[in-house]
Structures are given as C-alpha cells and as structure tokens.
Image (cartoon, rainbow, N blue to C red; front, side, top):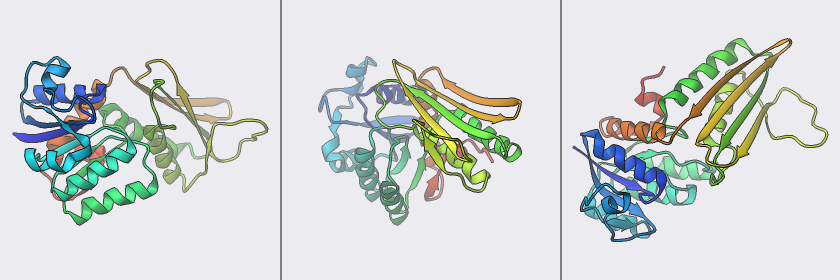
Length: 264
C-alpha cells in the first residue's frame, strides 16, 4: 500500500482526491492536512464514515509528515502554501504530486531546487486529466502544420478560481510558442489593439464552470478549434491519484503528467 497524504483535505478537490484514494485499492490515507477542522476525523467530515485520520494542521506540516511518514503527498492548494508544502515534504523525503497553479518563476525555482537537492520524485502539472494531456499533444501537432495561422486561447472557469489565466491555458501557450519558435503573449485586448504574430490568451470567470479550454487556429477562409471541457473535478482527482501511485516507484526527478501516461 502507498501511504498517501493530502493537503487542502477539507476543500472540494481534497475531498474528491480522498474519495479516489479510498477507492483505489493500493493507497492508504495516512494524513489529511488543512487549516480548518483541525483534529476532526476527515472521513466523518466528508461523509465517508470514520477513518481514524484526524485533520492535521497545515501550519505545522512538519509534525504531520514526521508522524504519518507518507510515501507521497498530493497538493492542490494555493501557490504560496504549496511552495512551503513542497519544500517541507522534500526535506522529509516524501514524493510529490502537485496540481496547484499560479506559481511565479521564483516559486518554481524554489520547489525544483528542494526536490532535486533532497532526491525525491515529483509530478508537477497544471492539469492532471487524461484528456487535457492528450489535448496538449494535439496542439503541438496542429501548431507544426498551421504555423501561419493566428492563434487564440480562450479558457473559462468558476467564479472562485483565483489565478488567471489558468495553468492549463499557459501550458497550451507555451507548447504552441515553443513549437513555432517563440511567440509573445497578449492577455486580452482593449482599445486600439491591432493583431500581430502573438498568441492571444483570454480568461472567463463565472458560475460553477469546472474548466473549458479552446484553442483557435484561424487562417484565411478557415479555422480549426481544438477544445477540452472538464465536466467534473473527478477528471483531475482520478489523474492525481494515478500520478501518486506512479511517482512512488520512479527514480528521483521532476516529471509531468505526460510521463505518467507515457505520452511521447
């Protein structure tokens, strides 16, 4: 059994990840970490029945990791908290699955240094759904063949999402830009904004939209749209637990979800 810890355990995503852990058959939930409901049984909180796993205080994650000794920690929180969680987990030789988004370049560097210096394994991805990882591959193939088309990325999420544009949209832009030899990004447009050779990125926030991403390749007289829609957070939770099972058995290093799925 893979001993697994979850941060943000009391949130919607955390609860869904825990549900997938309990159903997996090869994971054991050993720590549920959050800033609320400290000491309460996470199973009773989330309606799974008593699990004898009390909520550990995220403000003292070192004690939680030292007591529970997980093989892997799954982190879907916010950027500032996630960086601290990653650094502390790496110090405790705990492998990582990180689905948090909105990191700065400096934060990425801090996490990567902690992972490499402590010799642990980590899967870091802005999106853990199988479909999105195939979507990214399709964008790369399309960009190779549509280099003279205009490219626009439109993403939509629920009104509680804090970062914009989404990590998935940024990753899509990076893949297309790299394939085309480097492109500037324009985030939305206002006033006089003649189009150049940039990639346009647009964020929509409203209601309870789980996650929609559309990439528009527009040429003279025709266009192609490649789209992914997440119907529920289950797509992300299932992928995260799959990644946790995978990362516990690979050599130290930093990986992407495409490595878990063996997408070349």
